[in-house]
Length: 413
Image 1 (cartoon, helix red, strand yellow):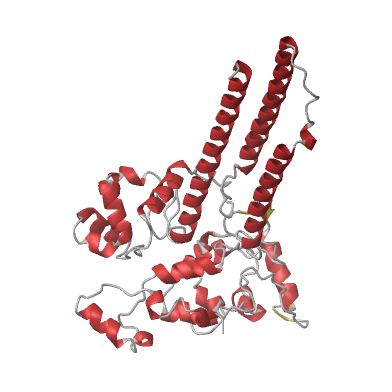
Image 2: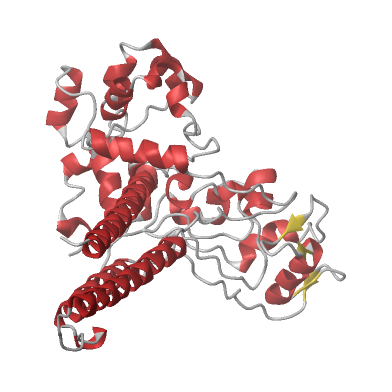
C-alpha cells in the first residue's frame, strides 16, 4: 500500500473515532441529565438544598465514596438506613422524610446521573433582590456541531489531497487514467452524505416531536406582577388561601379579584424589599397594587367600590392536553404531595414559571417511584392486602404503580 493512501486511511479513521467519542460523551451526559431531571430534580438540585440535600460532591460525604453503598441507598433507602447510621441521621436531618426508592434504576444509570452531577456547572447567582427562575442548563450542541463540521471539512480536504497525490504518482509512473469523478457525482460519497443527513434530520425531528407541547420554564408576563416570593415566601400566605380548591377540588383554580381585595383594601402600598424582574428592571409594587384596584373598581382615596370590576386576565402557565384527566385533590389530599414537588420552589419565585415538563413520562416515573401514604389515610383503606403485608413485614412501602397508577385508563378514559 502506498504512503499517501495509508496516510489518508489513518486520518479518516482518526477523525471517525474522534467524532464517535464526542457523540458518545454527549449522549452519555444527556442521558445522565435526563435521568436526573426525571428521577431526582423534584427533590434535589445540584448546587442547593431543596426537599433533599444538594448533590454536588455527594461522593465525598459519609459512606457514599463507596459506589456500591450509594447503589444500595438509592435502590432501597428504608432498608439501607437500618444498617447505616449516616443514612438514618440524614433522614432525621430532613424532618424524617424518607427518600423514594428507585429499585428500577440500573447501576449504569446511577453512574450516568453521578457523572452529570459531577460535571454540571452551578447556576450563576441571582442579582440581589431578584426573583429569577432557574437558569437553563448549558447547551453545548452548537460547539459539538461546529467540531463535527470542522472534522468533516478536514476529511474532505484529506480526500482531495489523496486524489491529487494519486494522480501525481500515476503520471510519474506513466499510468494513464481517466479524469477523477467529481465529488458530487461519486455515488459512495453522495450515498454516505444522504444517510448522514437522514440520521441527523431524524434525530432532530424525533427530539422536536417529543418536546412538542412541553413548555418547561415557560414564564409569561402577567397583567399584574404578582410575586409568590412576597406573598407565599416573605409574608407566609398559605397556598390554600388563594387556591382554596387545591386540596378538595379537581383544579387548584386562580383566585378571584375579591380574594386579592380581602387584603389589599387595607394594603395600598408596597414597603417590602426591592423586587427585580428577570431582565434586571425594578418592579414598583405600589403601582402593581393600583392595577389591581382598576380591575376591582376600587377607589383607595374614598375607600369604596366606585365602578364595576372585571376579572384579571391571567395567562395560564400549567396546561395539560385535553385528553388527560388530572385531579388536583387526588394528589394533594389523598397522596399528600407537596406543592413544591410539581411546581418547584414556588415560595421563592417572582413571576411564576413552569418548573416540571408535565410530560407523560414524568408522571409515569413519579407513579412508579412515589410511595403511597397508607398510614391514617382513609382513602386507601380498601387495599386491605397491602395493609396486612406492611403490618406483617412482607413489604415496607407501596408505590402508586402497585395500586394501578400506571394503567392507561386512569388518566385516559
